[in-house]
Image 1 (tube, rainbow over the protein chains, first blue to last red):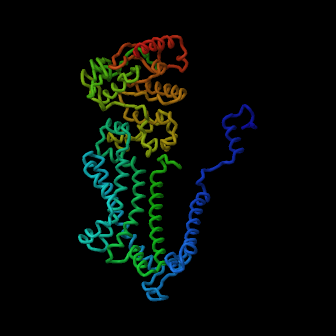
Image 2: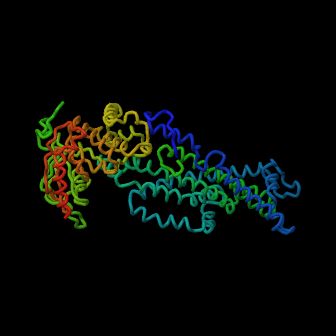
Amino acid sequence: MSVIDESGAAASHVSAGRTAEVAVVPPVGPPGEGLRRFVGPGVVFALFVGFWYFTHHVLMSDARKFLVPPPHHVMRDAFFTWDIPRGTGGSRTGGGLSRNLEGLWSSTQVAALGLAIAILIGLALATAMSQAKWVENAFYPFLVALQAMPILAFVPLIGALFGFDFWSRVLVCIMIALFPIVANTLFGLISVERGYHELMNLHGASRWTKLRKLQYPAAMPSIFTGLQISAGLSVVGAVVGDFFFRQGEPGIGRLINTYQNSNETEQMYGAVIMSALLGIAVFLGFGILGRRVVSHWHETRNA
Amino acid sequence: MSVDATVESSDSAAADGHALEFSGLSMVFPDGTHALEDISLSVDRGEFVTLVGPSGCGKSTLLRIASGLERHTGGECRVDRDSIGYVFQDATLFPWRTVRRNVELIAELHGVDAKSMTPKVEESLELVGLKEHETKYPKQLSGGMKMRASLARSLVLQPDVFLFDEPFGALDEISRERLNDELLALFKAKDFAGLFITHSIAEAVFLSTRVLVMSARPGRIIADYDVPFAYPREHDIRYDAAFAELSGKISHDLRGAHE
Protein backbone atom coordinates (compact mmCIF):
# COMPACT_ATOMS: atom_id res chain seq x y z
CA MET A 1 0.00 0.00 0.00
CA SER A 2 1.36 3.41 -0.86
CA VAL A 3 1.20 5.80 1.99
CA ILE A 4 1.43 9.46 1.11
CA ASP A 5 2.78 11.26 4.10
CA GLU A 6 1.09 14.62 3.83
CA SER A 7 2.43 15.90 7.10
CA GLY A 8 5.92 15.92 5.65
CA ALA A 9 8.85 13.55 5.83
CA ALA A 10 10.12 15.06 9.05
CA ALA A 11 6.96 14.19 10.95
CA SER A 12 6.71 10.97 12.87
CA HIS A 13 6.70 8.38 10.15
CA VAL A 14 5.11 5.59 12.09
CA SER A 15 2.09 7.48 13.31
CA ALA A 16 1.54 9.15 9.96
CA GLY A 17 1.65 5.76 8.30
CA ARG A 18 -0.88 4.37 10.73
CA THR A 19 -3.33 7.16 10.20
CA ALA A 20 -3.18 6.77 6.44
CA GLU A 21 -3.67 3.02 6.70
CA VAL A 22 -6.79 3.40 8.78
CA ALA A 23 -8.15 5.93 6.36
CA VAL A 24 -7.60 3.75 3.31
CA VAL A 25 -8.74 0.43 4.72
CA PRO A 26 -12.12 0.73 6.39
CA PRO A 27 -12.01 -0.84 9.83
CA VAL A 28 -13.44 -4.33 9.55
CA GLY A 29 -14.66 -5.64 12.87
CA PRO A 30 -14.65 -9.29 13.79
CA PRO A 31 -17.52 -11.29 12.23
CA GLY A 32 -19.53 -11.29 15.46
CA GLU A 33 -20.07 -7.56 15.69
CA GLY A 34 -23.32 -5.65 16.04
CA LEU A 35 -26.42 -7.02 14.39
CA ARG A 36 -24.37 -9.32 12.17
CA ARG A 37 -23.85 -11.75 15.03
CA PHE A 38 -27.56 -12.55 14.93
CA VAL A 39 -27.59 -13.46 11.24
CA GLY A 40 -26.26 -17.00 11.71
CA PRO A 41 -28.62 -18.04 14.51
CA GLY A 42 -31.48 -16.30 12.70
CA VAL A 43 -30.94 -18.34 9.54
CA VAL A 44 -30.77 -21.60 11.49
CA PHE A 45 -33.92 -20.63 13.40
CA ALA A 46 -35.75 -19.89 10.15
CA LEU A 47 -34.66 -23.26 8.72
CA PHE A 48 -35.88 -24.98 11.86
CA VAL A 49 -39.30 -23.32 11.77
CA GLY A 50 -39.51 -24.08 8.04
CA PHE A 51 -38.78 -27.72 8.67
CA TRP A 52 -41.46 -27.75 11.37
CA TYR A 53 -44.09 -26.45 8.92
CA PHE A 54 -42.84 -28.89 6.30
CA THR A 55 -43.26 -31.77 8.74
CA HIS A 56 -46.77 -30.66 9.60
CA HIS A 57 -47.97 -30.03 6.05
CA VAL A 58 -46.10 -32.65 4.05
CA LEU A 59 -44.62 -35.42 6.16
CA MET A 60 -47.62 -36.06 8.42
CA SER A 61 -50.74 -37.78 7.13
CA ASP A 62 -54.01 -36.01 7.93
CA ALA A 63 -54.76 -38.44 10.73
CA ARG A 64 -51.45 -37.74 12.43
CA LYS A 65 -51.18 -34.00 11.85
CA PHE A 66 -52.24 -33.37 15.44
CA LEU A 67 -48.89 -34.86 16.55
CA VAL A 68 -47.02 -31.93 15.03
CA PRO A 69 -49.22 -28.86 15.22
CA PRO A 70 -47.94 -25.85 13.26
CA PRO A 71 -45.74 -23.44 15.22
CA HIS A 72 -48.25 -20.59 15.11
CA HIS A 73 -50.83 -22.77 16.83
CA VAL A 74 -48.34 -23.59 19.54
CA MET A 75 -47.57 -19.91 20.00
CA ARG A 76 -51.27 -19.01 20.01
CA ASP A 77 -52.37 -21.65 22.53
CA ALA A 78 -49.39 -21.84 24.87
CA PHE A 79 -48.00 -18.31 24.80
CA PHE A 80 -50.65 -15.85 23.63
CA THR A 81 -53.58 -17.29 25.53
CA TRP A 82 -53.39 -16.45 29.19
CA ASP A 83 -55.70 -19.13 30.51
CA ILE A 84 -57.61 -22.06 29.02
CA PRO A 85 -59.83 -23.36 31.79
CA ARG A 86 -60.27 -27.06 32.20
CA GLY A 87 -62.91 -28.43 29.84
CA THR A 88 -63.08 -25.51 27.38
CA GLY A 89 -62.86 -26.33 23.68
CA GLY A 90 -62.35 -30.02 24.33
CA SER A 91 -59.34 -29.40 26.57
CA ARG A 92 -59.36 -31.95 29.34
CA THR A 93 -56.55 -30.46 31.36
CA GLY A 94 -56.72 -26.79 30.55
CA GLY A 95 -53.61 -24.79 29.58
CA GLY A 96 -52.42 -21.42 28.44
CA LEU A 97 -49.54 -19.21 29.41
CA SER A 98 -50.53 -18.82 33.07
CA ARG A 99 -50.44 -22.55 33.73
CA ASN A 100 -47.14 -22.97 31.91
CA LEU A 101 -45.62 -20.08 33.85
CA GLU A 102 -46.74 -21.62 37.13
CA GLY A 103 -45.14 -24.90 36.13
CA LEU A 104 -42.04 -23.09 35.01
CA TRP A 105 -41.77 -21.23 38.30
CA SER A 106 -42.02 -24.45 40.26
CA SER A 107 -39.30 -26.05 38.10
CA THR A 108 -37.12 -22.96 38.38
CA GLN A 109 -37.19 -23.26 42.17
CA VAL A 110 -36.19 -26.92 41.96
CA ALA A 111 -33.43 -26.20 39.46
CA ALA A 112 -32.08 -23.20 41.38
CA LEU A 113 -31.92 -25.04 44.68
CA GLY A 114 -30.45 -28.15 43.06
CA LEU A 115 -27.84 -26.05 41.27
CA ALA A 116 -26.96 -24.10 44.43
CA ILE A 117 -26.39 -27.30 46.39
CA ALA A 118 -24.47 -28.86 43.50
CA ILE A 119 -22.21 -25.78 43.39
CA LEU A 120 -21.47 -25.97 47.12
CA ILE A 121 -20.77 -29.71 47.07
CA GLY A 122 -18.88 -29.46 43.77
CA LEU A 123 -16.55 -26.65 44.90
CA ALA A 124 -15.85 -28.37 48.21
CA LEU A 125 -15.19 -31.72 46.56
CA ALA A 126 -12.97 -30.23 43.87
CA THR A 127 -11.00 -28.31 46.50
CA ALA A 128 -10.45 -31.46 48.55
CA MET A 129 -9.45 -33.36 45.43
CA SER A 130 -6.97 -30.65 44.44
CA GLN A 131 -5.27 -30.88 47.83
CA ALA A 132 -4.59 -34.61 47.92
CA LYS A 133 -4.15 -37.00 45.05
CA TRP A 134 -5.68 -39.84 47.08
CA VAL A 135 -8.91 -37.90 47.54
CA GLU A 136 -9.02 -37.36 43.80
CA ASN A 137 -8.35 -41.03 43.14
CA ALA A 138 -10.97 -42.05 45.68
CA PHE A 139 -13.82 -39.92 44.32
CA TYR A 140 -13.22 -39.47 40.63
CA PRO A 141 -14.31 -42.91 39.38
CA PHE A 142 -17.61 -42.57 41.20
CA LEU A 143 -18.23 -39.10 39.86
CA VAL A 144 -17.67 -40.44 36.37
CA ALA A 145 -20.02 -43.32 37.16
CA LEU A 146 -22.64 -40.88 38.46
CA GLN A 147 -22.29 -38.99 35.21
CA ALA A 148 -22.50 -42.11 33.06
CA MET A 149 -25.32 -43.96 34.77
CA PRO A 150 -28.89 -43.26 33.68
CA ILE A 151 -30.54 -41.36 36.51
CA LEU A 152 -33.75 -43.19 35.63
CA ALA A 153 -32.33 -46.26 37.28
CA PHE A 154 -32.17 -44.46 40.60
CA VAL A 155 -35.68 -43.09 40.52
CA PRO A 156 -37.42 -45.87 42.47
CA LEU A 157 -34.69 -45.74 45.10
CA ILE A 158 -34.77 -41.97 45.42
CA GLY A 159 -38.56 -42.03 45.59
CA ALA A 160 -38.55 -44.67 48.29
CA LEU A 161 -35.95 -42.80 50.33
CA PHE A 162 -37.02 -39.19 49.93
CA GLY A 163 -40.63 -39.32 48.80
CA PHE A 164 -42.04 -38.36 45.44
CA ASP A 165 -42.09 -34.58 45.66
CA PHE A 166 -39.87 -31.51 45.93
CA TRP A 167 -36.73 -32.88 47.56
CA SER A 168 -36.46 -35.87 45.28
CA ARG A 169 -36.57 -33.54 42.28
CA VAL A 170 -33.86 -31.40 43.83
CA LEU A 171 -31.75 -34.50 44.38
CA VAL A 172 -32.03 -35.47 40.71
CA CYS A 173 -30.91 -31.94 39.80
CA ILE A 174 -27.88 -32.22 42.07
CA MET A 175 -26.90 -35.59 40.63
CA ILE A 176 -27.09 -34.31 37.08
CA ALA A 177 -25.42 -30.94 37.71
CA LEU A 178 -22.58 -32.04 39.99
CA PHE A 179 -20.03 -33.52 37.62
CA PRO A 180 -19.29 -30.56 35.33
CA ILE A 181 -18.69 -28.32 38.36
CA VAL A 182 -16.30 -30.76 40.01
CA ALA A 183 -14.45 -31.63 36.81
CA ASN A 184 -13.98 -28.03 35.65
CA THR A 185 -13.12 -26.62 39.06
CA LEU A 186 -10.59 -29.37 39.69
CA PHE A 187 -9.06 -28.81 36.28
CA GLY A 188 -8.73 -25.09 37.01
CA LEU A 189 -7.24 -25.61 40.47
CA ILE A 190 -4.57 -28.10 39.42
CA SER A 191 -3.63 -26.42 36.14
CA VAL A 192 -1.78 -23.53 37.77
CA GLU A 193 1.79 -23.53 36.46
CA ARG A 194 4.57 -24.64 38.76
CA GLY A 195 6.35 -21.28 38.65
CA TYR A 196 3.42 -19.63 40.41
CA HIS A 197 3.40 -22.26 43.15
CA GLU A 198 7.13 -21.79 43.61
CA LEU A 199 6.71 -18.04 43.91
CA MET A 200 4.13 -18.61 46.65
CA ASN A 201 6.27 -21.27 48.36
CA LEU A 202 9.31 -18.98 48.34
CA HIS A 203 7.40 -16.53 50.45
CA GLY A 204 6.03 -19.05 52.87
CA ALA A 205 2.44 -19.17 51.62
CA SER A 206 0.30 -21.86 53.25
CA ARG A 207 -1.96 -24.19 51.27
CA TRP A 208 -4.93 -22.06 52.20
CA THR A 209 -3.19 -18.85 51.12
CA LYS A 210 -2.25 -20.48 47.84
CA LEU A 211 -5.83 -21.59 47.28
CA ARG A 212 -7.21 -18.18 48.11
CA LYS A 213 -4.72 -15.92 46.37
CA LEU A 214 -3.60 -18.15 43.51
CA GLN A 215 -5.66 -21.22 42.69
CA TYR A 216 -9.25 -19.99 43.04
CA PRO A 217 -8.66 -16.82 41.01
CA ALA A 218 -6.72 -18.78 38.39
CA ALA A 219 -9.53 -21.34 38.20
CA MET A 220 -12.31 -18.77 37.72
CA PRO A 221 -12.56 -19.14 33.93
CA SER A 222 -12.93 -22.92 34.15
CA ILE A 223 -15.20 -22.72 37.20
CA PHE A 224 -17.56 -20.55 35.18
CA THR A 225 -17.42 -22.94 32.25
CA GLY A 226 -18.53 -25.68 34.65
CA LEU A 227 -21.25 -23.50 36.16
CA GLN A 228 -22.61 -22.68 32.75
CA ILE A 229 -22.90 -26.33 31.75
CA SER A 230 -24.33 -27.32 35.13
CA ALA A 231 -26.88 -24.53 35.10
CA GLY A 232 -28.30 -25.84 31.83
CA LEU A 233 -28.26 -29.39 33.17
CA SER A 234 -30.05 -28.40 36.37
CA VAL A 235 -33.05 -27.34 34.29
CA VAL A 236 -32.97 -30.71 32.52
CA GLY A 237 -32.78 -32.32 35.96
CA ALA A 238 -35.82 -30.44 37.20
CA VAL A 239 -37.86 -31.41 34.14
CA VAL A 240 -36.79 -35.05 34.26
CA GLY A 241 -37.48 -35.21 37.99
CA ASP A 242 -41.00 -33.98 37.28
CA PHE A 243 -41.67 -36.94 35.06
CA PHE A 244 -41.16 -39.43 37.85
CA PHE A 245 -41.96 -37.67 41.09
CA ARG A 246 -45.57 -36.84 40.57
CA GLN A 247 -46.52 -35.46 43.95
CA GLY A 248 -46.40 -31.85 45.09
CA GLU A 249 -46.64 -28.78 42.90
CA PRO A 250 -46.58 -29.68 39.20
CA GLY A 251 -43.49 -28.42 37.42
CA ILE A 252 -43.09 -27.84 33.72
CA GLY A 253 -42.03 -31.48 33.23
CA ARG A 254 -45.25 -32.70 34.77
CA LEU A 255 -47.22 -30.41 32.46
CA ILE A 256 -45.38 -31.84 29.44
CA ASN A 257 -46.30 -35.32 30.61
CA THR A 258 -49.94 -34.43 31.21
CA TYR A 259 -50.35 -32.70 27.84
CA GLN A 260 -48.75 -35.71 26.19
CA ASN A 261 -51.23 -38.10 27.77
CA SER A 262 -54.20 -35.98 26.79
CA ASN A 263 -52.92 -35.39 23.24
CA GLU A 264 -52.86 -31.63 23.70
CA THR A 265 -49.80 -31.28 21.55
CA GLU A 266 -49.96 -27.48 21.15
CA GLN A 267 -49.68 -27.14 24.91
CA MET A 268 -47.04 -29.83 25.09
CA TYR A 269 -44.74 -28.18 22.57
CA GLY A 270 -45.36 -24.89 24.30
CA ALA A 271 -44.22 -26.35 27.62
CA VAL A 272 -41.15 -27.93 25.98
CA ILE A 273 -40.21 -24.58 24.43
CA MET A 274 -40.71 -22.91 27.77
CA SER A 275 -38.36 -25.28 29.57
CA ALA A 276 -35.83 -24.84 26.77
CA LEU A 277 -36.09 -21.07 27.18
CA LEU A 278 -35.37 -21.44 30.89
CA GLY A 279 -32.31 -23.56 30.11
CA ILE A 280 -31.07 -21.01 27.57
CA ALA A 281 -31.67 -18.16 30.01
CA VAL A 282 -29.61 -19.67 32.81
CA PHE A 283 -26.90 -20.70 30.34
CA LEU A 284 -26.64 -17.15 29.00
CA GLY A 285 -26.94 -15.71 32.50
CA PHE A 286 -23.97 -17.63 33.81
CA GLY A 287 -22.06 -16.87 30.62
CA ILE A 288 -22.53 -13.14 31.13
CA LEU A 289 -21.72 -13.41 34.83
CA GLY A 290 -18.54 -15.33 34.02
CA ARG A 291 -17.44 -12.75 31.50
CA ARG A 292 -18.12 -9.99 34.02
CA VAL A 293 -15.86 -11.71 36.52
CA VAL A 294 -12.92 -12.69 34.32
CA SER A 295 -12.92 -10.82 31.01
CA HIS A 296 -10.92 -7.84 32.28
CA TRP A 297 -7.90 -10.07 32.82
CA HIS A 298 -8.52 -13.34 30.99
CA GLU A 299 -7.22 -13.68 27.44
CA THR A 300 -10.27 -15.17 25.77
CA ARG A 301 -10.56 -16.19 22.14
CA ASN A 302 -12.83 -13.29 21.27
CA ALA A 303 -11.47 -10.72 23.69
CA MET B 1 27.44 8.79 44.41
CA SER B 2 30.34 7.15 42.68
CA VAL B 3 31.50 3.79 43.95
CA ASP B 4 34.44 1.93 42.57
CA ALA B 5 32.97 -1.32 41.40
CA THR B 6 35.93 -3.55 41.98
CA VAL B 7 36.25 -2.54 45.62
CA GLU B 8 34.23 -4.64 48.01
CA SER B 9 31.31 -2.82 49.51
CA SER B 10 32.32 -1.56 52.91
CA ASP B 11 28.92 -1.23 54.53
CA SER B 12 27.39 -3.28 57.29
CA ALA B 13 26.56 -6.36 55.23
CA ALA B 14 30.22 -7.10 54.69
CA ALA B 15 30.93 -6.88 58.39
CA ASP B 16 29.48 -10.23 59.41
CA GLY B 17 30.01 -12.80 56.68
CA HIS B 18 28.80 -12.74 53.11
CA ALA B 19 25.28 -12.02 51.93
CA LEU B 20 25.32 -15.34 50.08
CA GLU B 21 27.86 -18.12 50.35
CA PHE B 22 28.22 -21.60 48.93
CA SER B 23 31.08 -23.74 50.15
CA GLY B 24 31.92 -27.10 48.64
CA LEU B 25 28.31 -27.39 47.57
CA SER B 26 27.18 -30.38 45.52
CA MET B 27 23.84 -31.61 44.31
CA VAL B 28 22.77 -35.04 43.19
CA PHE B 29 19.09 -35.41 42.31
CA PRO B 30 17.16 -38.46 43.53
CA ASP B 31 17.21 -39.86 39.98
CA GLY B 32 21.02 -39.87 40.10
CA THR B 33 21.60 -36.74 37.99
CA HIS B 34 24.77 -35.14 39.26
CA ALA B 35 23.94 -31.45 38.83
CA LEU B 36 26.57 -29.55 40.80
CA GLU B 37 30.03 -30.43 42.06
CA ASP B 38 32.10 -28.57 44.64
CA ILE B 39 30.75 -25.07 44.14
CA SER B 40 32.42 -22.50 46.37
CA LEU B 41 31.31 -18.96 45.83
CA SER B 42 30.42 -15.93 47.90
CA VAL B 43 28.55 -12.79 46.96
CA ASP B 44 28.55 -9.64 49.07
CA ARG B 45 26.32 -6.62 48.92
CA GLY B 46 27.51 -4.38 46.16
CA GLU B 47 28.66 -7.37 44.13
CA PHE B 48 26.94 -8.56 41.00
CA VAL B 49 28.04 -12.05 40.03
CA THR B 50 26.90 -13.65 36.81
CA LEU B 51 27.00 -17.34 35.95
CA VAL B 52 27.34 -18.44 32.35
CA GLY B 53 27.55 -22.03 31.22
CA PRO B 54 26.11 -24.63 28.89
CA SER B 55 22.40 -25.44 29.12
CA GLY B 56 21.69 -27.96 31.84
CA CYS B 57 24.90 -27.28 33.73
CA GLY B 58 23.05 -26.65 36.97
CA LYS B 59 23.04 -22.84 37.04
CA SER B 60 19.33 -22.66 37.78
CA THR B 61 19.66 -25.45 40.31
CA LEU B 62 22.19 -23.34 42.19
CA LEU B 63 19.70 -20.47 42.42
CA ARG B 64 16.96 -22.85 43.47
CA ILE B 65 19.19 -24.14 46.25
CA ALA B 66 20.01 -20.60 47.37
CA SER B 67 16.31 -19.74 47.55
CA GLY B 68 15.39 -22.94 49.37
CA LEU B 69 13.25 -24.35 46.57
CA GLU B 70 15.71 -27.25 46.30
CA ARG B 71 17.77 -28.99 48.98
CA HIS B 72 21.46 -29.58 48.22
CA THR B 73 23.04 -32.94 48.98
CA GLY B 74 26.53 -31.88 50.00
CA GLY B 75 28.48 -28.88 51.27
CA GLU B 76 26.95 -25.71 52.63
CA CYS B 77 24.76 -22.84 51.56
CA ARG B 78 24.54 -19.79 53.81
CA VAL B 79 22.04 -17.04 53.12
CA ASP B 80 19.26 -15.17 54.90
CA ARG B 81 16.20 -16.71 53.28
CA ASP B 82 13.94 -13.92 54.52
CA SER B 83 15.82 -11.40 52.47
CA ILE B 84 15.88 -12.91 49.00
CA GLY B 85 14.41 -11.49 45.83
CA TYR B 86 14.01 -14.11 43.12
CA VAL B 87 13.27 -13.04 39.56
CA PHE B 88 12.22 -15.93 37.36
CA GLN B 89 12.60 -16.35 33.64
CA ASP B 90 8.84 -15.88 33.34
CA ALA B 91 7.42 -12.76 34.91
CA THR B 92 4.85 -14.97 36.74
CA LEU B 93 2.50 -12.04 37.20
CA PHE B 94 -1.01 -12.90 38.37
CA PRO B 95 -3.17 -12.06 35.35
CA TRP B 96 -6.19 -11.12 37.50
CA ARG B 97 -4.24 -8.50 39.42
CA THR B 98 -3.32 -5.07 38.15
CA VAL B 99 0.34 -4.11 38.00
CA ARG B 100 0.04 -2.41 41.36
CA ARG B 101 -1.70 -5.36 43.02
CA ASN B 102 0.97 -7.66 41.57
CA VAL B 103 3.69 -5.51 43.06
CA GLU B 104 1.91 -5.74 46.41
CA LEU B 105 1.82 -9.54 46.36
CA ILE B 106 5.06 -10.47 48.08
CA ALA B 107 4.68 -7.84 50.77
CA GLU B 108 1.15 -9.14 51.28
CA LEU B 109 2.44 -12.71 51.68
CA HIS B 110 4.86 -11.49 54.33
CA GLY B 111 2.04 -9.89 56.26
CA VAL B 112 3.03 -6.28 55.65
CA ASP B 113 0.01 -4.15 56.51
CA ALA B 114 -1.58 -1.93 53.91
CA LYS B 115 -0.36 1.34 55.47
CA SER B 116 3.34 0.59 55.55
CA MET B 117 3.10 -1.18 52.20
CA THR B 118 1.92 1.83 50.21
CA PRO B 119 5.15 3.90 50.23
CA LYS B 120 7.25 0.81 49.42
CA VAL B 121 4.99 -0.14 46.54
CA GLU B 122 5.05 3.45 45.26
CA GLU B 123 8.83 3.50 45.37
CA SER B 124 9.16 0.18 43.55
CA LEU B 125 6.77 1.27 40.83
CA GLU B 126 8.69 4.52 40.41
CA LEU B 127 12.04 2.72 40.28
CA VAL B 128 11.00 0.48 37.39
CA GLY B 129 9.06 3.25 35.65
CA LEU B 130 5.65 1.63 35.84
CA LYS B 131 3.90 4.28 37.91
CA GLU B 132 1.60 5.40 35.12
CA HIS B 133 0.80 1.80 34.17
CA GLU B 134 -0.12 0.65 37.66
CA THR B 135 -3.80 0.10 36.88
CA LYS B 136 -3.15 -2.06 33.82
CA TYR B 137 -3.53 -5.81 33.74
CA PRO B 138 -0.62 -8.03 32.63
CA LYS B 139 -2.32 -8.88 29.34
CA GLN B 140 -2.02 -5.19 28.42
CA LEU B 141 1.76 -5.12 29.00
CA SER B 142 4.71 -5.80 26.69
CA GLY B 143 7.26 -8.45 27.64
CA GLY B 144 9.67 -5.82 28.95
CA MET B 145 6.99 -4.16 31.07
CA LYS B 146 6.02 -7.53 32.52
CA MET B 147 9.62 -8.11 33.60
CA ARG B 148 9.71 -4.62 35.13
CA ALA B 149 6.60 -5.42 37.14
CA SER B 150 8.16 -8.69 38.24
CA LEU B 151 11.28 -6.81 39.34
CA ALA B 152 9.22 -4.24 41.22
CA ARG B 153 7.39 -7.03 43.03
CA SER B 154 10.70 -8.39 44.34
CA LEU B 155 11.97 -4.92 45.20
CA VAL B 156 9.19 -4.09 47.64
CA LEU B 157 10.74 -5.96 50.55
CA GLN B 158 14.20 -4.52 49.77
CA PRO B 159 16.04 -7.85 49.80
CA ASP B 160 19.78 -8.04 50.44
CA VAL B 161 20.20 -10.82 47.91
CA PHE B 162 18.76 -10.87 44.41
CA LEU B 163 18.67 -14.04 42.34
CA PHE B 164 18.00 -13.63 38.62
CA ASP B 165 17.27 -16.74 36.59
CA GLU B 166 17.77 -15.53 33.03
CA PRO B 167 15.09 -12.87 33.41
CA PHE B 168 15.56 -11.14 30.06
CA GLY B 169 16.09 -14.22 27.92
CA ALA B 170 12.75 -13.91 26.17
CA LEU B 171 13.08 -10.22 25.30
CA ASP B 172 14.22 -8.64 22.07
CA GLU B 173 17.70 -7.10 21.93
CA ILE B 174 16.65 -3.49 22.49
CA SER B 175 14.30 -4.20 25.40
CA ARG B 176 16.98 -6.36 26.89
CA GLU B 177 19.63 -3.65 26.73
CA ARG B 178 17.24 -1.11 28.15
CA LEU B 179 16.40 -3.40 31.05
CA ASN B 180 20.11 -4.04 31.59
CA ASP B 181 20.63 -0.30 32.00
CA GLU B 182 17.74 -0.07 34.42
CA LEU B 183 18.85 -3.09 36.39
CA LEU B 184 22.28 -1.54 36.83
CA ALA B 185 20.70 1.68 38.07
CA LEU B 186 18.69 -0.38 40.58
CA PHE B 187 21.80 -2.26 41.62
CA LYS B 188 23.65 0.96 42.32
CA ALA B 189 20.66 2.48 44.12
CA LYS B 190 19.94 -0.52 46.32
CA ASP B 191 23.40 -2.02 46.64
CA PHE B 192 22.15 -5.59 46.90
CA ALA B 193 24.12 -8.79 46.33
CA GLY B 194 23.22 -10.04 42.86
CA LEU B 195 23.54 -13.53 41.43
CA PHE B 196 22.51 -13.56 37.79
CA ILE B 197 22.17 -16.26 35.15
CA THR B 198 22.29 -15.59 31.45
CA HIS B 199 23.26 -17.10 28.12
CA SER B 200 24.34 -13.72 26.78
CA ILE B 201 28.02 -12.98 27.31
CA ALA B 202 27.50 -9.29 26.54
CA GLU B 203 24.79 -9.10 29.19
CA ALA B 204 27.04 -10.89 31.70
CA VAL B 205 29.97 -8.54 31.16
CA PHE B 206 27.86 -5.41 31.01
CA LEU B 207 26.08 -6.05 34.30
CA SER B 208 28.58 -7.78 36.51
CA THR B 209 31.40 -7.10 38.88
CA ARG B 210 32.41 -10.71 38.35
CA VAL B 211 31.62 -13.39 35.75
CA LEU B 212 31.92 -17.11 36.46
CA VAL B 213 31.96 -19.78 33.77
CA MET B 214 30.55 -23.18 34.62
CA SER B 215 31.32 -26.54 33.04
CA ALA B 216 28.78 -28.96 31.59
CA ARG B 217 27.12 -31.34 34.06
CA PRO B 218 28.13 -31.83 36.79
CA GLY B 219 28.49 -28.06 36.98
CA ARG B 220 31.76 -26.76 38.36
CA ILE B 221 33.24 -23.29 38.24
CA ILE B 222 35.96 -23.40 35.59
CA ALA B 223 36.76 -19.74 35.13
CA ASP B 224 36.41 -16.60 37.19
CA TYR B 225 36.76 -13.05 35.81
CA ASP B 226 36.64 -9.71 37.56
CA VAL B 227 35.03 -7.10 35.36
CA PRO B 228 37.14 -3.96 35.58
CA PHE B 229 34.67 -1.32 34.33
CA ALA B 230 33.54 1.30 36.80
CA TYR B 231 29.89 2.12 37.38
CA PRO B 232 27.82 3.84 36.16
CA ARG B 233 28.40 1.97 32.91
CA GLU B 234 27.43 3.72 29.74
CA HIS B 235 25.60 1.86 27.04
CA ASP B 236 28.59 2.27 24.69
CA ILE B 237 31.10 0.33 26.79
CA ARG B 238 29.72 -2.69 24.96
CA TYR B 239 31.80 -1.55 21.99
CA ASP B 240 34.94 -0.92 24.00
CA ALA B 241 38.06 -2.93 23.10
CA ALA B 242 38.53 -4.14 26.69
CA PHE B 243 34.89 -5.23 26.75
CA ALA B 244 35.41 -7.22 23.56
CA GLU B 245 38.56 -8.80 24.87
CA LEU B 246 36.93 -9.98 28.09
CA SER B 247 33.89 -11.24 26.16
CA GLY B 248 36.27 -13.15 23.90
CA LYS B 249 37.95 -14.88 26.82
CA ILE B 250 34.64 -15.88 28.33
CA SER B 251 33.41 -17.10 24.99
CA HIS B 252 36.54 -19.19 24.63
CA ASP B 253 36.02 -20.77 28.06
CA LEU B 254 32.38 -21.46 27.27
CA ARG B 255 33.37 -23.24 24.08
CA GLY B 256 35.68 -25.38 26.17
CA ALA B 257 32.87 -26.09 28.63
CA HIS B 258 30.67 -27.41 25.87
CA GLU B 259 33.16 -30.12 24.93
